[in-house]
Image 1: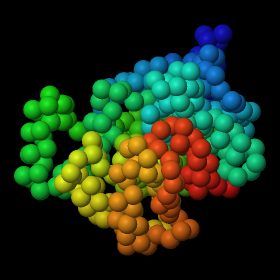
Image 2: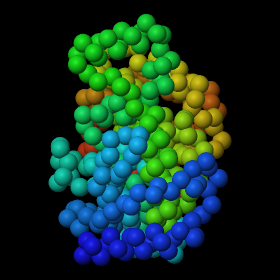
Image 3: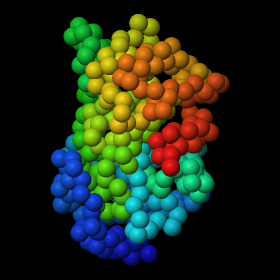
Length: 325
């Protein structure tokens, strides 16, 4: 069965080569020559749809890792789909396989919202994290570079003394998505390739990275959802300099209003208790960039904590905001 599915996908790749939609980015012809093995995960416990995996997606920028593609029920090459890129991909679909037995319930919400006509049809590209280097991959490294040099050095010295790898890799993580992963998705699946139909979402550090993605590549991503965004940047601490660097970066680089959608949210329990203090700064930056309630949100969810069980209860909100029909 699996060999048949691999063959089927390879045939799909060949058949869709000539009907790819033209993309006006610099990456339109950057189709990797590597042969990818797409396998359907029949053992995945899904509400609906199917899950396809490249077990170790090769990259010259980051450590290879699994990438999952969720296809809605009745996926058809006869129509086009929007694409939602999500971080921490192993936490999204099947709680039986996650470390904390929780999940985002992406397939449940996506299926319901598409069935109800509340969102456009879309697929999800789920990039797995590697726990040991998750922070290095997801921290917006140019934000660190905006801190005073003395502060940078103090933080790096602390990391070295604590035997923590301080090598930032956020820029390479984005290059992986934009230059290696996205062209292959555009090539293999029946998707729109314009920014109006390309979105990115994550929580905690993945929220920071989603903000970073739309800021670094505003011509690629038309919207970003940043759930329980980890404004503290690392472990919470007094006199934390990292939020200052993050907000300086946003002030300088967040795309101006008019062609993008930005969604932020936060709770006030467990790790989320550290986030409400930063909400006014986020609101001020959004206002300065020209955003209104029509194209931005910074929502507070009282009593919610920092967990997949909290995020899956409100996942419909960012999905409708980004992909609303």
